Image (cartoon, rainbow, N blue to C red; front, side):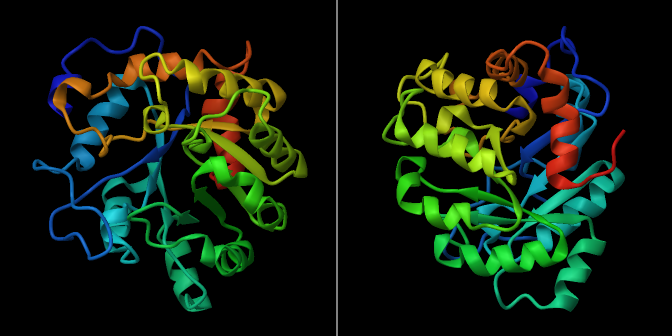
Length: 286
């Protein structure tokens, strides 16, 4: 699937210098899937060489590698990928309340800048661990990537409002039961953003859309959030799209990026791709 998508010409609308892909996964040999999570992608594994092709094709300069659910709480594959990608990559790992200061310092030294919560099937840590992960992340100066069924955001709102860390609501909020732009769930997202430490990620739109391309049911809510706070939007490819089961459904990276980035207000693209992720992940500016 990957090779099929990289046979075209480079993007006709290259990203700005320093563009950051904030949501991708990478897999190296020697790190098997662990119980509780999904299996590994099909061979050949989507590794560093394959992703460098994506970066060159799209014009992406920097990347945030997120710990894959297949590896649950074992960050070994993530750290190996960061070593392989060197100074263009940073990581989001899985930690919990038992991760001590020494381990946090070791992860930070290996270019880990964030912690992941995924309260969905296959996730290594659910929302039961939210406060303990927030405490460890905040103490280390990390951010958090938080993913859950956004349709339930009103239930979780008091706890989310209390977070101390910088954090991002992943994957267009994943409103699995749908949400109109003026829904109370979207009002809650704006309330969280206005608190000052919450971002919203444009990534994996196909995972929660009930309509398919061009994802009109996600477009409206995404446009409202981006218009409200363009300085709080980040973007990611969600490569290698592990949830896509059929080759013919595999997205064209450029077409998908152009679609969702067109939902941004005029003039916001460069900050969404460069300065916003620099602030959220605290990576050096270009």
